[in-house]
Amino acid sequence: MRPLRLRTRVTVGFAAGALLISAAMAVLSYDLTRRTLLDSRERTAVRTAYFDATVVQAGLAADGEPGDVLRALDTGASRRVAIQRWGTWYLRNADNGITAAIPAGLRQQVTDGQPSRQLVRTDNGAALVVGVPLTDGSQFYVIDSLSELDRTLSVLGLILTIVAFVTTACGAVVGTYLARRALRPLTSVADAARTITAGDLTTRLDPAATPDLERLTSSFNGMVDQLAERLERDRRFAADVSHELRSPLQTLAAATSVLTRRRDQLDDRSARAVQLVAEEVDRFQALVTDLLELARSDQRPDRAPVDIAALARRSCADRGLPPTIVRDLPGADHVWHVDERRFTQVLANLLDNAERHGGGAVAVVVGGDDRLATLDVDDEGPGVPPTDRDSIFGRFVRGRGANARGDSDGTGLGLALVAQHVSAHGGHVTALDRPGGGARFRVELPRDRS
Image 1 (spheres, rainbow, N blue to C red):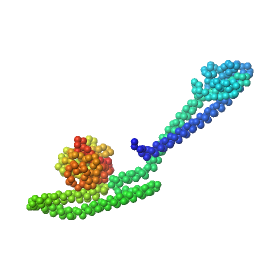
Image 2 (cartoon, one colour):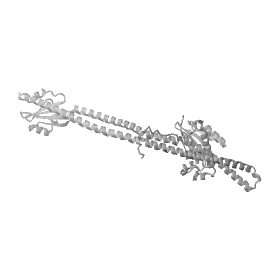
Image 3 (cartoon, helix red, strand yellow):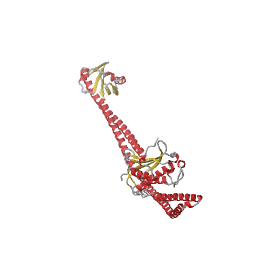
Image 4 (spheres, helix red, strand yellow):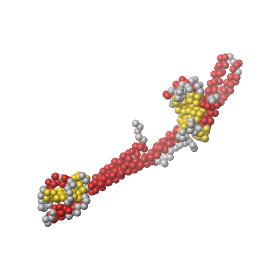
């Protein structure tokens, strides 16, 4: 299982913290409000019950009928009253479960002369039963319904739950915002590293932009300075060596050309030696040319709109290949923003590689979508073993698969130049298996309309 990204972890942490805090506050607020409302309602119910008991006691003392005395009380819709006198129950209206709602323990306490109250659960919801002993030995009971209080608490619970969820969402939003702000300097470092990887070694970070990361910024800039200096030294060394080799090579090539033209006048052994020298001089010249190109390959590409399909047809025609092997996939945009000189060499090197190691290219396919542009060069050779698919793009590298796919001619820099030019455009090249057998070299570039 892949670990969560840092931004996701920060967002989840803020959301979880907001949820815990809001849930705790909601529970505490609900409990405190419930206790406060319930205590207030109980005090009100007890005061009212005592007042009604005084009225009932006065009515009974005046020889009034218990039923008439109860009907004289103002009980409203939420209160029901009852009198137990000498073992007989007297009610204001029909029983409707009033007497059954009065707990036996509370009855006994009131019968013993002790006023009592108790929360009970009736068919109509929660209720408060208050019992008051009267002076003539009767007992007066009030069943006060708490259904309205229950509804109020239900609404309060719903509101607190909604508030908890809203607070959690706000916590997630705040976490996302803070994570984005906190990680913005690291994003700048990643963007700068990506730009440098693409070949722009002039990219630097601004130490004043994020004072907290000044040490990281300074170290990063110093690293890039050293990298640029080292690459420049290597480039200059390769260019200087190549230039120094060109003069003696031209002399050797001229001398070899003279010998080659007079080869018919030499004996077989000498003619064979002249042919070998001429071939090696040609190979040496190609190597020097590739070294010079490699020394310049770290420079930024000069981009312009280029018809890659037309460029591929010209490259194929230069090598005697039929233009029909070049095709566009349906819907593919064959106009790319690239350096034409460099991509001419990319195509030339891939086609030469296919001819040298795969019996010649059989297909050049231009494809892609709005996000990515692709170029495939296919051959029918033995393919590239998976273990060599990364190493063959190195300089002077001939992997086991390369040796198995053909002879050892070439400079060993062709695919390295392909990788270098494609990387300078922000893309990459990979070696794949061609469906049906053979190798497929795929160039992938991000779309760039600039």
